[in-house]
Length: 335
Image 1 (cartoon, rainbow, N blue to C red):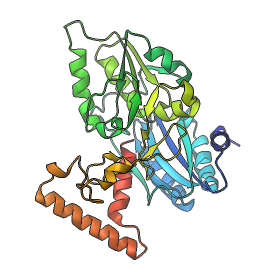
Image 2 (cartoon, one colour):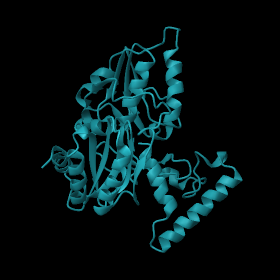
Image 3 (cartoon, helix red, strand yellow):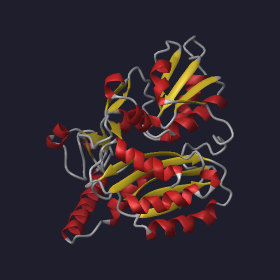
Image 4 (tube, one colour):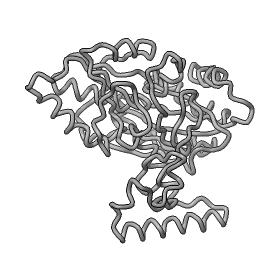
């Protein structure tokens, strides 16, 4: 049994998942030179299709990134394929479990970047910041000389973050380099000496740490395995995490035990919605919520209403609407 398969079963045992949790969800990535990524695409697509695996995997010259879901047996086959390629040694991977399939289809995509920052010349496989294990994270962020940076987007930071973290308030990771450049150019004595960066699964903060090094910061750290690994390893009573963690699948958010949280989602603007938000007068499923209603023009609203109508009609026919599948695929890509 490979180490990846062993890790999946250990994670399942650790979380005490019952027999009803028949689906494994794997969030994985690695920055590694993949000159043959185009050749790998059909091989991995066919393998996942044959095993009933669904989700999205991105392949680029800079590496692999994805979130996939399938039965434990199907996931074992995919994990074995990854383990057989030595380039995927030390793959960053986090497991969670559910009673139903989290995605609607499987797509292996070719991209310029496995996490899109708009800076393809930044190559974390060659140079990146210093990994910090979850057990050492709280001591680092308690250092008064450290600026703690949440590299996620505002729809993610809205429901949870680490205490004292700075929120760049981005709507897309593409906006992060501009914020980083402004931070690097400070000359009023507020330019931080040390940076501690984090994200959901570790991939964005790893690439962001490489960017920060290119901006002239010498001491740059990032949370190994991201928030999800921290929540897995650190007991809630000892944790500096506050709130829930946004995830890029049908669960929307997970709590400190990595169980589905209390949030739903507005599928118009992607903002997470607390239970009380669902009764807000400006909430219309699939169309708008109080975050986005005032900013919609008539054409947008008409388009969202038509999409939601088609989703409803597809559900009545017992089918998965292609727009909903594409939405899940976009969510996974942004992880």
